[in-house]
Length: 175
Image 1 (cartoon, helix red, strand yellow):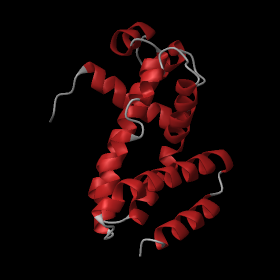
Image 2 (cartoon, helix red, strand yellow):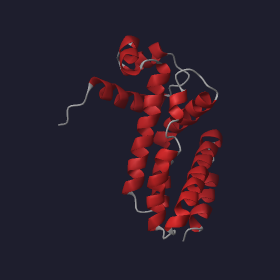
Image 3 (cartoon, rainbow, N blue to C red):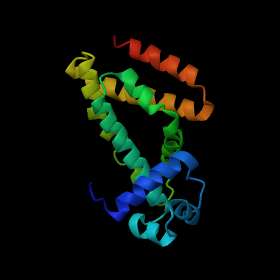
């Protein structure tokens, strides 16, 4: 068994809790209660509610990038991204992004890597689709923009059928 730090255990618990109960609209004390800890412990490990939510979103993103590296093709990755259990985390991502763009204190660091951290993993996927190396950077940004746009559509409308159809059309262009 791998021994994890108290911060890592709290982060894992927060990811699970937010996935099932949401989090952006809750107070730090309410989040702490839901996690079975104190607000002081969350402040100690994450600095603030925004620090906790940013850590959650970053960790979920890191796990998604790992999943991208493990899948053989875009459809499988899309299915993983749009899993109902991730919906609250996807919604949190967009909420934090908006707050960070608006300059909300404690959230602006969320923007660090929100684009660039995805480009290499997407380019690796594009290589498997046979996209020429010189074209991969532009296609990676396009793929990221389409995916994020459709995820925003999904968390806004809940219309899984429509976003799946749009992603299918996008992926078909690479076949």
